[in-house]
Amino acid sequence: MVSPDIASNRKEYSEVAREHARLTRMAEVYASYCRVREQADDNREMLKGENDEEMVELIRAEISELHDRELVLEQELKLMLLPPDPNDEKNTLLEIRAGTGGEEAALFVGDLFRMYSRYAEAHGWRVEIMSSNPTGIGGFKEIIALVSGEKVYSRLKYESGVHRVQRVPETETQGRVHTSAVTVAVLPEAEEVEVDLDPSEIRVDVYRSSGPGGQSVNTTDSAIRITHLATGMIVTCQDEKSQHKNKAKAMKVLVARLLDLKKSEQHEQISADRRNQVGSGDRSERIRTYNFPQGRLTDHRIGLTIYRLDDIMAGKLDEVLDPLAAHYQAEALKLSE
Image (cartoon, rainbow, N blue to C red; front, top):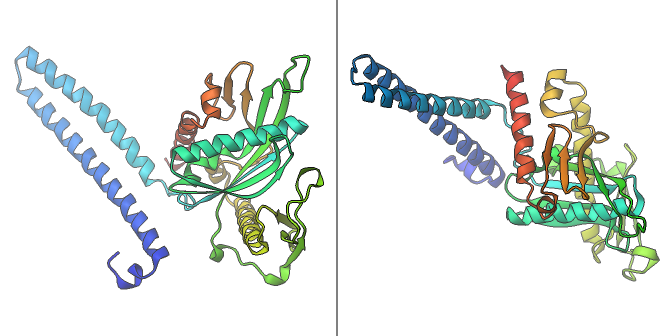
């Protein structure tokens, strides 16, 4: 860290500093683990020569407490020794799209975006809308946002998948519960060096922005459509009045999607054990159900059910995300043993 070459390179220094902090924490936990084991051994030695019954009970109680503490520290060390996900520290592109359910699904896209935005605000993260396709009554066919902050991807990476909602739409006169679906994709923000983008494989089209119902947003050709010819991938952006800003945002989304595609192809070549460790990433799988009449959230991957849906939709997501992280860490530990 004191090397002039490292100190003068902000990106490299940041990476080294994060690794230093990770190793420092690991060393501190290991030191605590050693102290606990040493103290427990000392207590066992004391027990051998102790005849006072009251003192024996006190020593045994302390040995039991130290044993519990030792197991906790041992588990923490095992987790720390797992290979870190290189994307955990990255900012994240959050893509939410309406699936089956028409306008009700589009409204739930808006609800989920507000839920994630409130969670981000509570953690001091920044949310910047990159692209959106509003329906005009508060919903979105699609919304893409860049979420920036500390450990954003590590917290949101398990949100990719199909989110199902069960509730009575406002337009439903019979009070019937409708089921709709929304797709969430969580992509780590790509760095330029991670994706080799050939300019000859990109077509950029410029057109006039328009809003819901064809209403003109502005009178200049500022909307951008970028087509990646090699994959057929298309990204559009018309949120900004500036053509240059729309192009920059669209390029950021395109690069992140290409990186995700590249990593998905790599995942197909690795072992089944590794795929089990990181998850299949198959976004066609239903991962969660939001049942509004019962005030219930169910995460189908880990069998988690919580009857505080209003709190969760208000952005209090930790009671969902913490068990998910613990589950996947436990799965990773099983594979490492």
